[in-house]
Image (cartoon, rainbow, N blue to C red; front, side, top):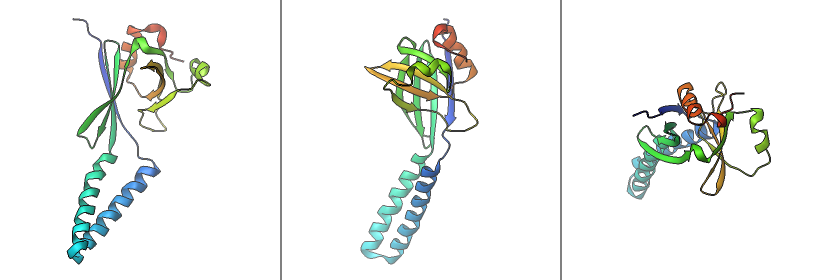
Length: 165
C-alpha cells in the first residue's frame, strides 16, 4: 500500500476584532454576575448572560488542520480545541494551480471572480500558499500554510500544478 498522507495545522492569530469580542464577552460575564447578585428577574437574566458568554468564549479559539490523502485535501476548522468541522474538500484534479502568495504564477487569476477562503494563521511571518480550484461549480482562492512534507506529496501527485516561485 503506497498511500500519500500528510497533515499540517495552524492556530489562527487573534486580530483586533477577536480581541474586542473577547473583551466584550468578559464585560458581559461581569455584568451577568452583578445582575445575579441583584436577584429576582435580574438574577435569571444574569444567569442566562453568563451561560451564553461561557458558551461563546471557546468558539473564538480557532485552529485549522489540513489533511492530504492520495490527491485530496481536507480543510478542517477546530473550535475550542474540541469541535472539528470539515470546511472544504478539494481533489487535486479540481486544482488549477498551487503557488506561494504573491507568486507571478497567480497573476492570470487577478481579475477572475473567485470565492476567497482563508485557512491560514494570519501570521505576518508566515508565507501562505494559494490554491486556485473549481469545486462544485465555484472557483475558489484558498489560502493555507502547508508543511514541506505536504507540498512534496502534492508535487508528487500533480507536479505541474505546484509552482515553487
